[in-house]
Image (tube, rainbow, N blue to C red; front, side):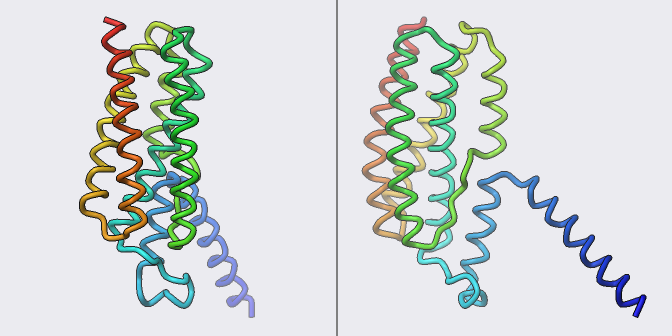
Length: 195
């Protein structure tokens, strides 16, 4: 009986340790992992399955991650800059990406896709780095990050709109790409005016 108790204690300790390791994963990795589990046909009874192809689920988590990061960085910009053009852009990020995040969340819920609830570790690290900069350095780095981020997001949206398999996600990507292009044009104009 004592041996059996020890086995249970060791198993419980191993399970607790494993749970701690999962907490170290960032939100996007966790969402991708859950979606991969749902995607397996052997777990449909347990998970309810997932209603999209794995590439479409990956698109959804990547888009959600980027959208969450844009909102978070926009809020940071409002506290770090006095440049009115950057403040206006940051407010646009919070509003537009907030709406896009809500629309994507509704699609994800209908398709049983798990989305991240916060930006991934790379975006959190970038926000932390930006938060430590002086205003002038922040402005330059934020604008640069927004240009790079919107180029990548535009490519992501265009790719899904062209190659995605799920009609709802394709439509979301097509519509969102128009907004992202508008953002990219706006941030490029701000960048040009800072030179």
